Image (cartoon, rainbow, N blue to C red; front, side, top):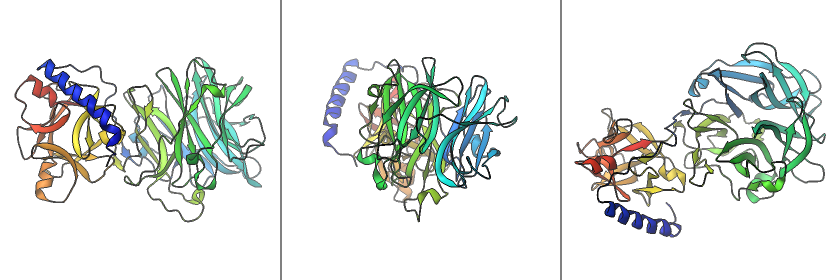
Length: 486
């Protein structure tokens, strides 16, 4: 399940933590401010929509655009919630030209609001040369981008007249940048990543152009292509994190990440550090293949960062992956490591997205499984060990069950009053052992507690670093049996 050797140091720390709890002898540690409440959605958000971009505007709406599999138009939806985008009506705001530029391969639109106007960046080929891909921009001055007129502002002045696409924009310390992917003469790759300052208007760059990265690592070149594309940025903790997509657009597709200090010279390539491995990749256990070309948005309450991406729910593709229409738009919450870096985890299974169960009285610790045993630990790695889907209870009668994220079909269940993550064997005793009543938190009504269906009055509770099923007769026990969904 998890290799044991790398965890000995963490277990040693856990022993120290248990000793410290013993010394505290009943002191209840009150929780720090919640990092971010649970943000749950149901995937997929949209079928046959690739390269998704979701922008939350100050008007209270989310705006969603993506590549349509016919590659012939730009579509746009809006809704007041992320989940609402799944059923929102979709409008065609622009169609490809019948001849010349912008006449083929309409790819990867992004919608942004800059200086009081709406802009859509997209890539397009020519009718007489569909692989003559270049970045273009549309502009709309209407308050609602689903109305008004979209004006073509032409091609962005990227440095070479070569294959170039996937333009995005972001601002750091008052400076707005454009980033994109392009094939550079003299470098034998499909595309590299570039960065420049935005010029006098949103369809121009100005000044020096920085080459941020070239795909050279094994995970960037799988499937016989050398690709770095789809750059997009999230900022937090004084740093700029630029994610990008790499390798072939089938199950090999994955996300990498560049990191820079927000105070650094972002146009100096040495300011950026590349992740040694993918930060988000195919996961056969959850049935998600080729996740990539992402964007970021925020939850409805503004407290959680949300990863937006596409993938497929099958591995094998017949023919050219670009002709397979079934990339789907998906969303899931981004978590943040104690060192201030983002943790994307794994692409979660279809259906409701998972949560983490954070200890109420030790708020740096989460329920996780380790060798199938449930524990509470800080800095859980891999993240998915601490993620559970809250689903309809296997035992029915208004209960819930907690399904493992990285081991679908495995559930948190009690056995001999110990909590384990085990595969559902279909038996009545398993269904009862894995079913709980969700209650208001015993130590705080704003949190949650989970009462056993078949052992009424007993709750999921951490004792030291292990998780067990016990009663909660006193203040300490009630705090131990209370969790914050994150």
